[in-house]
Length: 186
Image (cartoon, rainbow, N blue to C red; front, top):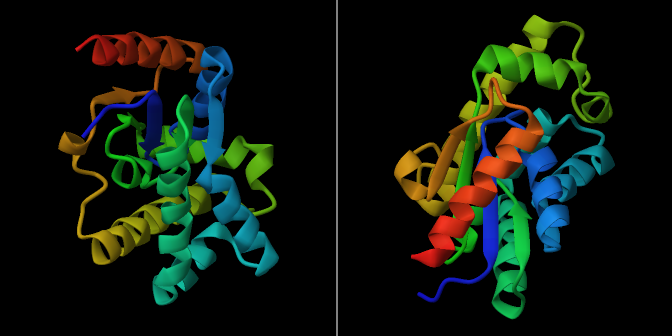
């Protein structure tokens, strides 16, 4: 399998995945391919929270498979891409595969305070946000295992794993760029 100048970024919910992926694409002047935004938009169109939509997609796997397939198809024809997708590493195995980790308490606080999430996951308390993130993560892991036969939380799937809990987005960006350059050199 020939490596391409493609970086796939996934991670725990509220790990900074989308923020850093956008920054990375901008910094490297790569195209930004964002599956998560599409997923959120579909949830909003169905008047569901992202958690409810994830459960809906479990009963309609063709939606999930089409979302992931679109990343693979785009990557076949293009180069210089940052893919922000939960299964981007699986859809585009020739990419530099990054997983961002974060403690659930930090994730819940980030998600709860993020104004961009309010239209698709408005929760009344920090504790409710934490419970929702745990529920979503469990549902996602089960769905991906059932659909693709893989465990997204198996860190051996990735070229680089980083805990973002105590790092700024800029620090995460710089660490990914360092590791990406090493990966390309090998």
